[in-house]
Image (cartoon, rainbow, N blue to C red):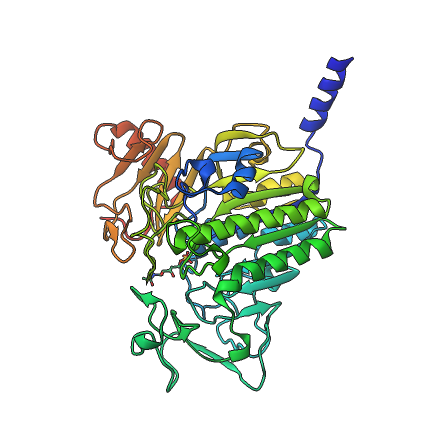
Length: 499
Ligand code: NG6
Ligand code: CA
């Protein structure tokens, strides 16, 4: 009898009947593969992220499509590789929206399946159509590409405008004090980080020397909008309050929430509650802050009674970076912490630490805890979640890896093209191939390796996770196979290849 019950349940589980749990994507900004204790960090404790990893599935080969922000977010939300859209590069805060309003997106697909949809947190996919007046309705934006609700920071915390945008309207803007944004020239009489270091509380290292807001010099110039300007140290609490409110008021019907935290991207501005807590300076402190936010959010899901009906996908948009534009002790106080774990490179890199990121799925009572080495990518969420909810999705590069995401199979995608600053490389099975490119082997400003080299690189990641041993010359057969497959997907036109 017991056996019968057991096998009956098995059949049911495998019967791929559509299910529509709430879906939450918790997305960190620049969090590295080695930044969580569940992924091996010993100097930093992330107990709440660890719950997702240890009580859900911890993927050891989970990828963003890119080693920088905008392209990764583009890939995740559209199911299309970012290198197919030449505008999918790190954007200034004044850039127009790079997702076409005609295009398929993850939230649009879920809306068709009956979901309510929301984004709360960092956007960085552009806003407007190129002619934006920030004082009017800011559109097109997230609301026009599938999100019913959108409470966002436009680009990054280090870029103007430093205001929140609530469904296309700058939150708290006083019409008598309009806001102006320009990335080319300053507004007359406005101090800058470059000319007025005495007004800054954080010292810029590279680039970030335009308008000063809350003592922090930023990228881009901004004037006005005083009442709407955010408080940096409250940003984490602010977004947390919004996501808690959202689930409380939308729990009666299935919802999709994209919770895009701003940590540990620069400027790192932990709330005073977290200052000094990591012993690692602001970068460590904001990781602890993000971890706390996730813990609080989980408590809310539990309190609202929806934890067992919610699939949580946790990941990061790209790998880690220490100096990304400010002197903030990230290097000096790092100690023995290894933000990239055993991987080589980091943000901006085609080496593994650029696109390979923490990636977990958690669904209390449904997903059986485990570790999976299936290769999965954020671009796959579109096809996989469409499969789960029983919706049709217009797919391009997105593959259905639902079974792997739910822990029913260890089979992920077979290959993947990753991107860093417009250059692409190939992953397949145990292998990574990086074609030759012109350019610098170092992203000098951040100090991270780019993986750019004038010759082919081929690594066996199973034997050489740190990508130290280039096998391109000693294994021409594998190199040829990898290069041919890469070119078949990527096309021969990938621009900066050494001729
Ligand atoms: C880079 C900035 C860096 C950071 C990054 C965006 C320079 C030299 N560097 O261009 O400071 O703002 O863009 O990070 O300006 S991301 O995670 O949103 O891609
Ligand atoms: Ca990022």
